[in-house]
Image (cartoon, rainbow, N blue to C red; front, side):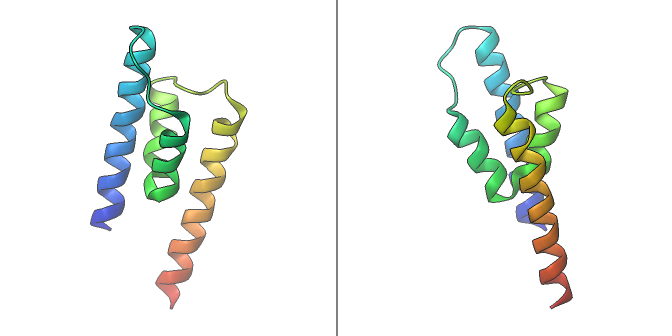
Length: 83
């Protein structure tokens, strides 16, 4: 649980940093890295970051992909919890 909390906090702030960089014409964080953080357990942080910072909400693979990753991770956590 500590890992999930940490990765979600990190992911949330990385989405915020990338949004700031986008507004200020700075070197950006790769989309693969943003999706990778979500896939490593940070999907809730990614989802929150997308909508709080209004970042990547026009890219279909984020709008669809992040909730799908979140649902799959929830199913996996529930499944492992029952074992």
